[in-house]
Amino acid sequence: MPSYKAPIRDMQFLLHEVLGFEDLQSYEAFSEVDRDLADAVLEQSAKFAEEVLTPLNAVGDHEGCTRHEDGSVTTPTGFKDAFKQMTENGWTGLSLDPEFGGQGMPGMLGIAASEMWTSSNMAFAMYPGLTGGAIKAIMSSGTPEQKQTYLPKMIAGDWTGTMNLTEPHCGTDLGLLKTKAVPNGDGTYKISGQKIFISAGEHDMSENIVHLVLARIEGAPAGTKGISLFIVPKFKLDENENPGERNAVSCGSIEEKMGIHGNSTCVMNYDDAEGYLIGEENKGLRVMFVMMNEARIGVGLQGLGQSEVAYQNAAIYAKDRLQGRSLAGPQEEDKPADPIIVHPDVRRMLMETKAFNEAGRALLYWAAKQEDIEKHSDDEKLVEKSDDYLGLLTPVIKGYLTDVSMKTTIDCQQIFGGHGFIEEWGMSQFVRDNRIALIYEGANGVQALDLVGRKLARNGGRALMALNSEIGEFLKENKDNENLSEFMDGLGGAQKKLTEATMWLMQNGMSDPNNAGAGSVDYMHMMGLATLAYMWARMAVVAQAKIDEGSNEKFYPNKLITGRFFMLRMLPMLDAHLAKIKTGAEPVMALEEAAF
Ligand SMILES: Cc1cc2nc3c(=O)[nH]c(=O)nc-3n(C[C@H](O)[C@H](O)[C@H](O)COP(=O)(O)OP(=O)(O)OC[C@H]3O[C@@H](n4cnc5c(N)ncnc54)[C@H](O)[C@@H]3O)c2cc1C
Image (cartoon, rainbow, N blue to C red; front, top):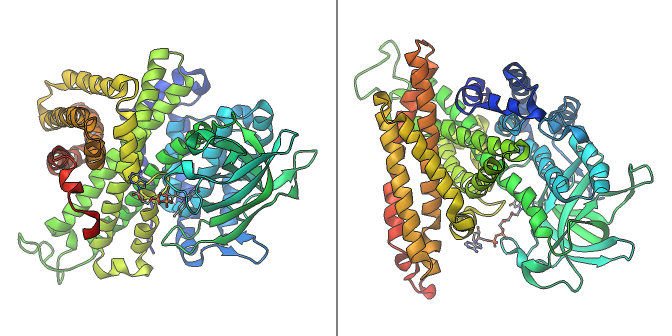
C-alpha cells in the first residue's frame, strides 16, 4: 500500500522563509493570520490528508462510482463520511470569504492544504475543488441574491458545484456549443441539451448540486459571442431556499475511465431544466473563465500532487529494494545486493522528480500569493502586476507543470520495476490518475497556444516585461554571492534564452502563425524552466543565508544540492527547446496529410 506524508517542512520553508507569507498580515483581512496559526492549519490539514484521505485513495480506485437505475450515483465507500468530516472541520471554506461563512485564510495557505488533499486522494479532492471554482465564479458575477442564496451553502459544503462546458461535438472549441436556453418570461430560463464528461456531476455527498452551465440563448449570435452562463441547481429551492422539487437535470451515465475512478464523470442531460442567468447575456464565457482559471491552477496542483506522492513512495522503495551492486563497488557488503538508490540512473529519476516538485510547489504558492495581493492590496500598480503575472503564468502552471509531472510520476513508477506495473503497489494509480491533468481544463497544447497567442502580447507584453525586470533586480542583488554563482548564471542564461525565443516568435509568428503554433509547447516549457529556475535561485539565496548564519539543519544544504541539480541537469533543456522553436513550422507541417 502506498503512503503519503505531507511535506510540511518544505511548505513552511516556502511560506515563511522564501515567499513572505507574513507580508500578507499587512492586509486587514489577514492581520490575525500569523505563523503559528498557519502552521496549525498545515498540521491539521496534513492529519486529515494522511489519516482520512490517503486510505480512501485505493478504495476509490477499486470501487469507482456507481450509477443506479434512477440516475443517482453512489461514491466509493468512505467518501461521503470523509466529505462530512471535511465540511464539519470547515476545510471547504478555508480560504473563502468570511462574509459568506468562509474562514478567510490566505489563498497561499489554502493551496498548501489543497496540495495535501490532492496528493492523498486526487479523485476525492476534485469534489471540493470544483465547488471552490464555482464559488469564485458566483462571487465574481452573481447578483447579491444569488450570492446570498448559493455561497453560504456551497462554502459550508452542504451543496457542491460543477462546471458544464463540454458537449459531444464540442470540447476545445466552445463556439460550437449547442445547449439551448429559452426565456420563461419571468427571468428564468429553460435549459436543454447534453453535457458530457462532467466531473462530480451527480453524487451522494451533498444535499444539492449547483451546476454552472454554458448555453446559448435562443437567437444569440453563433460562436463564442453568443454564450451565456446559467446556474442550474439539481433541486430547485423552496420558499425557504432549501432544496425542494427536483429540477429536470439528470445523470444519463457515468464514464468508465483510465483513472480518478472515485470521481463521478457524468453525462448530464438537461431537459427544460430551470436555470438562472449569471452575469450578462452572451458574456458567459467571461464568467466561466473565472472558474476555468481557478481550475487551471488547481490542475497544475494536481500534477504536482501526484508527482509528490509518487516521489515519496519511490524514494522509500529505492532505499529498500536490493538489486545489483553499485558501480563504485559494494555499498552494503553484509547484504546480498545494494539498495537500488546506489545506481546513478535511479538517482537521476529521483533527483529530477525532487527538483521539479520543490520548485513547482514554490511556483504554485508564489502564484497563490499573487492572487492574495490582487484581492487585498490597495496598491493599484501591485494589483496590476499580480494580475498580469497570473494571466501570463496560468497556462504555464497548467500545461508545463502537468506535462513534467506526468514524466516524473512515470519515472517514479519505473523505479519500482515490474512491481510498478502491478496495481497492489499503487504507483499505477498515480500514473493513471495524473494522466487526465494534461487533457482537461484545456489540453496542454491549447494552454501553450493561449500563452503564445494571447498572454504574451497582452497589454504590449507588460506581464513578461514585469517578470523580466523582477528577475533582473533579483540577479543584480545577488550577483556578488559567489557561493550561488551556478544559480545566478543559470537563471541569467535562462532569461536570455527565453528572451531570444520570445523575439523569434514575435518576428516569425506574425508572418506565419503556424511558426507560433509549432513552437508554442516548447516555448511554454521554456517559460516553465525559467520560472522554476527563478524559484530555485530564490530558495538557494535563503538556504545559503541560513547556512551562513550557522544553521546546522540538513534541510538547507540539501536544498542547495537539489537546486544545483536542477540548474546543471534540467535547465539545459532550454537549449533544445530554443533550437526546436527556431526551426519554425516547416519540419512540422511538411508531410502531406495523406501520408499520416
Ligand atoms: C475525466 C474527465 C473529466 C472532465 N471534466 C470536465 C468537466 O467537469 N466539465 C467540462 O465541461 N468538461 C470536462 N471534461 C472535458 C475536457 O475538458 C475536454 O475533454 C477537453 O477540454 C478536450 O476536449 P475534447 O475532449 O473535445 O478534445 P478536442 O477538442 O476534440 O481536442 C482533441 C485534441 O486536439 C488538440 N486540439 C484541439 N483543438 C486544438 C487547437 N485549436 N490547437 C491545437 N490543438 C488542438 C488537443 O491536443 C486535444 O487534446 C472532462 C474530461 C474528462 C476526460
